[in-house]
Image 1 (spheres, rainbow, N blue to C red):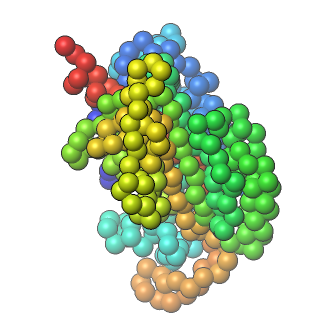
Image 2: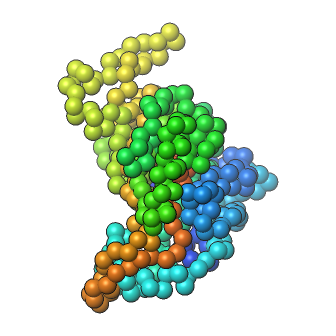
Image 3: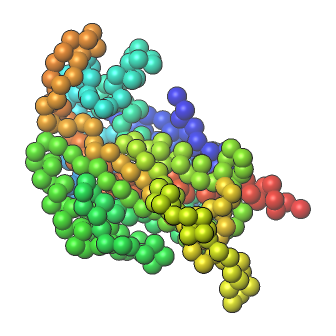
Length: 363
């Protein structure tokens, strides 16, 4: 099912939304990295349901258990298994969806591919699968910070038609992001966006949006041309998240409005003798390889597919019907998507850091 991601730093997620639990097995983590349950739990708490009035009301503590690969507070270099047990399950809320397809959800496509699916909360297609990614991302973040002082921060910049004021990706901090439930550093935008999300929820509807993510202090030389270009792996990582519909890096689609002379990042040497670029329209990657500038990406998330508003659909046997979905769902996924995107970016950068060291720094 494509549940494994990465090369040297390799993860496999498992579990269904309303099964016994979800989790991840991480293979390739270097030994002797200091690691505590609390560090992983911090990231899971940022992702968990029920954390605010604009998140799904499902009540899960998402308490993680490290089953293997860590001893006396340090990684062993062996596979790390992390489990989060499901607690607040209500499979009965989804009984109608056993035979009725939710518009724009994975129900119909899973049936078309496998002929059988777990309809309780969407099974593997549920965003609850991302618990394993976020847990593994916490470890990747720790390695990146310890080895290269890499910082990864994501934040919401658009909800529906509302946009934040310009945000400086070089200055934004985790403290600013975590100071509000929307996870955006623009207070005026936060207030308006929260009101819009609440209004959509009250109508039984949902909203989408855009978030931006910056990775600072990324070493030069990460990326494996031709097919494993760094931006290609980042795109795959982010686009593998539920509800994603768009990916940009650097200037993105706006770069098409420029000429080559306007878009090119000219070089200069700074006071330390380091090669830099005057601008960063490349988003920190050139030729598929990191150039030492901040990596800046954006991801578009569609409105949550499962909504209470009645819509036309069909049953598994093709009978026309309508569906007003039950269950507990986010009226907007963006606030909880912030730690998910950070995790996927961290997984890619950690994997490429290890690959670069193995290939280019062994002699």
